[in-house]
Image: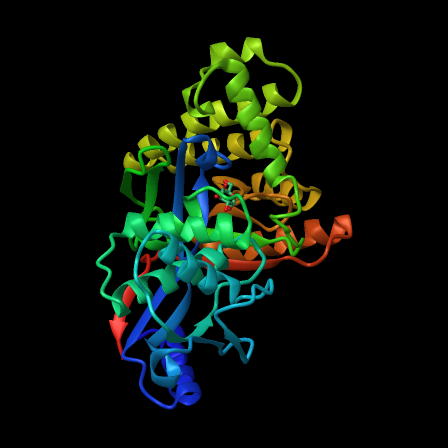
Length: 376
Ligand code: GLA
């Protein structure tokens, strides 16, 4: 068992006074390319990171009538009812969405522990949802597939937690494979693993947390989504996935800019997959830089800190760099020659200090396995 899984199992034993029997864990993610395309029916290419949320589950207390949720990281116990904007809303949302989808679940006990950085755009919320969904599926013998579980997790996020996100994060957390990125067609939900052997290419995936807090629900995320829907209806297409560059002549203002990003980004994802298959990281990196410019200029979701990181990356030998996730703060990624990462992060730190920005945090992640289930 991984350390997070052991901690969850131990927390269960100490809190509920018995062995849990089942432990599931699910990772956070970074998106390599394909941003703000998922809710437009387009393509994304995330990979899971080696940071996870684990949950140990067992039958509920008081003869199976009471559900209790415990977080070892916050040392808090919560009931299943009473949405309170805490970590507990994610498992509550998953249990609710399972019921909404017609699956019988009764009371359960759950203990959580994780090491996905919180609030940085690395999808700690999708990780807790995916771990919960996989664990409850096993506990109640629902026999659901990973795609069904991802849809349930997205429903939890959209309709219980109240964030109108697409399906990328939950999909990545449930379906990614170690050493690979995952190409997802967010309309058909067909997914395909694409080998991402960074080590053989002599590269490292460096993540820069700008430490600028993102607030997905109260930022421009929903606003961007609404503009895309407006642009699609102006063009008479179901989703921007169906629009082409030629259609852009019919748009102006914000609709033009947002649509131009989505159309070009979808094309970049498919080109990036081809580049990965040929191990052409030069081309892959170029597409990352172009994606960032499009998110900065057309989608307008970058920040001065994210831009400073990408500029520093360009100046200090990164093959490619871009913001990852929703933007408005959070994290950016860069592909950096393995033996240059220390000099690279130093140079970025200096650039941040020069601008008077908060000191960033750096991580190096390895493309990791999606959600997994085990016994205790
Ligand atoms: C957030 C959302 C995802 C996706 C990205 C932007 O991470 O949760 O569904 O829309 O933003 O690509």
